[in-house]
Image (cartoon, rainbow, N blue to C red):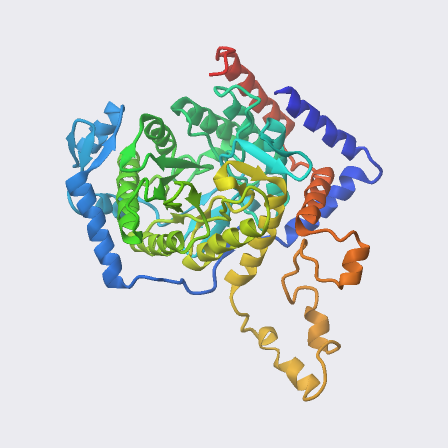
Length: 527
């Protein structure tokens, strides 16, 4: 591995040798793990903004786009032949789909929900149905923290965020390209990134999609990590161990890179998230209904393509839609229109019968300030109310996705914890009804000392690890810190106390040997 990784590993070893080190930290980690859940199963209704007649109209408009306008599949003759054999009308690189064809292919073959297996089976997640999986933000070339400000991301940052995601009880997934480690060559860095997910976490992870051969490397690394457990003995098919982000080059275009990666993962029975990436007003029409119809059409084409490559391969319908400033062209977040797109697309995904990806904690703010907080909240709350199954960008997003924030990550993890409680709904058990407490206390007294309160006080309410609810005097005496300063202290403490999950040394060496072999096959140039 690279020098940065070696330094990080050495630091962990030094921490482990401190008095009471590794054993105590393993015990603490086990205690934390015991109260976490691998994913959320919602107990509240979906919030919907369009009635059945409106949803049917939008589906018809999407079919019109597919039939009359078509979708471009560029620079991939094999993809065009697959689509032609599947019943599409292929004219050059423009593909037209007869009405209902894509929906028919998807509903006949795609699973309504599926399990993404983690190398620690207790961390496996079920994606689809009433389940919600939170994953970190994705793709930022920069990082930001209170000490250094904004700078390019490095592999050490990538490893740090994998560790923080592993330690976060409200995150269920290790994510993918949490940040882009620009200190490593482009043609090799995917190996270090996938290795970091496997080494420093045992939660599920995402693979590389920036070239078909990098997707193949991701699958091979997963095979090594899972060993004989990679194949499902009941079906003979590979287990789904990786989920991957396939972005549509909106408007209405798939490029060879994304198609190549999608084919690799589909043939290996790994999951693909087919996501139109739309800045409304630039990459789609300015209206909510127009953006929804285009998003659905683009996604249907990609989902059907994956099923033609390998019927039954797990897929997720993705939607990333942001508005833009019509004055500057800059993307905006936390505004009402993208929330309406999100609510509508979630309902359309349920009607189609496939899992749905969208949302997160999105913002345009450059720092974790009030703007970041309210824009992120205005994205995360609709995400949860709408019923998103796979939530990419849950934690860390700043600057429209250009920066991954250390303090923002910790703050977003806190908000995600609150969503666990919200999605659990109202407890109507005997304990939840609390009649015993009401009987015991009666009129004119307080509930602080009653038996029910004493039995429930530790878990009665969500307790934020960051918010300060003390008196002004106590807050002032403790340094008068704002939330960003408290978050700075928190992520540093977490990394100092981090202990890696167990990984068989033989498996670790096999991963490293494969990486050495693959890196040796590449030229040294940064291409």
